[in-house]
Amino acid sequence: MHPFLRTLSVAAALVTVSGLAAYKSDDTTAPNATKTTTGVIPATDIKMPAGFSATILAEDLETPRHLAVSKGGDIYVKINKLKDGKAIYRLRDTNGDGAIDEKVGFGDYKGSGIFIRGGYLYASSNTGVYRYKLNEKEEVIDMNNPEQIVKGLVSKGRDEAKNIAVDNNGYVYVNVGSYDETCKEAGTNKGKMPCPLLDSVGGIWRFKADQLNQQYSDGIRYATGLKNVVGLDWNSGTNSLFVMMHGRGKFHDVFPQYYTPQDSEKLPAETMYEVHEGDDAGWPYVYYDPFQKKKILCPEYGGDGKKTGGEKAINPVADFPAHMGPNAVLFYTGKMFPARYKNGAFIAFHGQAPSLKKGYMVAFVPFKNGKPSGPWEIFADNFAGTDLAKPTGPIQHRPTGLAQGPDGSLYVTDDLNGTLYRIAYKAPKK
Image (cartoon, rainbow, N blue to C red):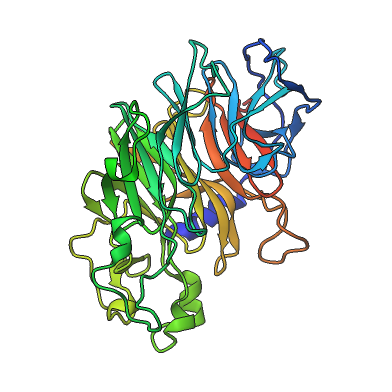
């Protein structure tokens, strides 16, 4: 049976549950904090395996993208558009009842990336990376004076979000997506060889996490051939970087002699890579075909949908249906969830696969010994709020960011309606 068909059979057996396992947070209050009245709202529409529950902790957060949760329970959410001149929210439960009752805004630069590591909160704009010193509770000490560690990154309006991860060795990794999807010569359908875009976009750049005011040229191109990576995470278990690449499109539109409209719905796969310094994932020369299980030469470079290529390019460690839009990946290290989830990868999908009528979900990939140990599966579904096969209304929520709480719960942002979810687990009674 095809892995996705197995996934559908799993999804059919999912049950909807609600409730909350409350968590404890620091009770100090910032002088510029805004008190909120947001309570804990059971998210009964979210479908998950038995024992899991989803609750809504906050709404109307504008365009929340990625997020990070401190060991004290503070939730730092990066906002892609400025709200009252601010682009980061610190959300806090001041009385330990499980509800967010305080919101503080800081940072005056829009963007997407945010990450906690080694006593600092790192956050990105579309052109650079900043850091904020944290105290022993992982609270930002000075919200108004961040240190800029990277500046001058390319930003030309398309795929410009600079998503970030930080390793255990003093480096920050920054995605620099390509503003051009195919790297063609002007006025033609022929690809440039070599593609000059790869000199400055279409890859992951690495910078020192403790050096201020680094220019683009101060970083190293850690990995290339990645059109746009919105989700990336440093896997401490393997001591390596994992990334999720958004695939390209427009096969049938431009090359109808090789691709049908149905091909364009199914190709190429969305892909997960484990990348090391010097790796090349093959874009824009090749794409990954999930049905042939091969790297296929792109039509701009002489491909016809069957010719293989990219012999020196790395293979994905996992693949997913086309156009699902993977926006975050998180390796789970908590103790709350059942043991099968430990060290596995959660993925937030921001779009849907047209051919499958599935999407807007959080998926899970089991891992063993640092590698995927089984097919991907649907973990939390129905954020869309409508049947994607026969929709009766607009899409309600689009999962974007993922973070793990200090108690092992999972947080999910939705950048369509500005919602923050918390997913917890309690073993069902037998």
